[in-house]
Image 1 (cartoon, rainbow, N blue to C red):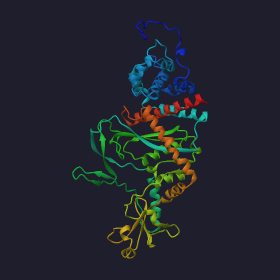
Image 2: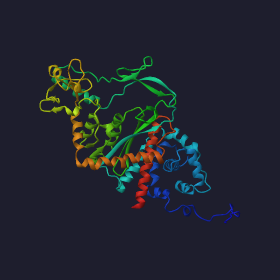
Image 3: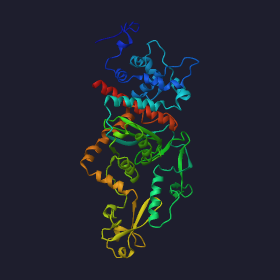
Image 4: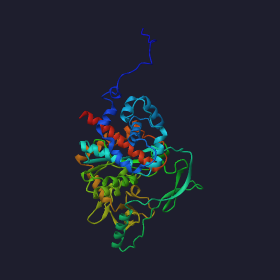
Length: 462
């Protein structure tokens, strides 16, 4: 049996740091994939020409990349690992006897220099630009989705607060079409949209309408986070990241919002960022899940001359009632035909942007299908059709094409896989930071590191 009682800890190693780092180590691939010196001109204006010499900004940002790519999620532990890991020292350009910057150095640099800068977004864009130059990015089809990240906030420490309902980006366009529609039938126009919301009444324990204001749970630990509750997932305070990626799973843009903002609302902010990029003209298709199937989102995509690829969304009607698609819409006469072959005529356009079609009470009174159609005491069936419903119907037509069957299933291989990898390996599952701006900066950096790691591995293979 081997017994190593003669182990020595005072041996002198006559090797250079470069020789001790394996040639196939990930840090070498990262260094070969990108020239990190692009960071210097982007942060030069944040440093003074006078005073004590500063820590090299390249070292600070590379420390963050080590923190995210290797999944430490703690700057204190990252500094401890750099002290003993020769590969990390090689990546940072630190000699073996050179001191590692303190774990508080980054936080102080962020407070004094980077908190109000656009450096994080610029780093993300530079890495993505390099991936595009390698030919790794294909923007023909983009895949979008949203994921939540648990906030650094106790879910039991919150207060009820009344806030104003945020105006949606498309409301002005919708209001103009509503007024045009009402003028055609001699109805008066509206001055603004009626953003009716429901709030929790502490006295009655019920939801009540509060007009353009609503009551929310606000965290006392991190007020900028939002109360997230979706399906069977745990109710908690969180931030939500709306992201888009290409078919090769390179992230193209990301927008961070509070966790209580619905995906269909945060979509417009991220989509606008995507359309402002230089490669927006290459995008032909946009693939989203069922949570984004709405007339407003379908219109936004189609108006940009892109094809929306979305799945089937089940109707919200009761099981025993007729589905909405069982009422045939006649586009030429602008009316609906019920299953009993009776006409539902257009009457008015509501403030919320829906055209109402009503049946004749005489037809419904003796109808054999009335129990499956309406429970109205006046025997009137009402169908609401959104002003932009034609865009949703166009999206439904695309769903039956062979291209949809080829493109849509790739969502699970692209954007879903991106979120899974970043949650498992890059610290996207929960955040230690507080505040919307800090978490937006952190999101830029997490997805930048995701792109960098993928680019480095692909570049090594190529």
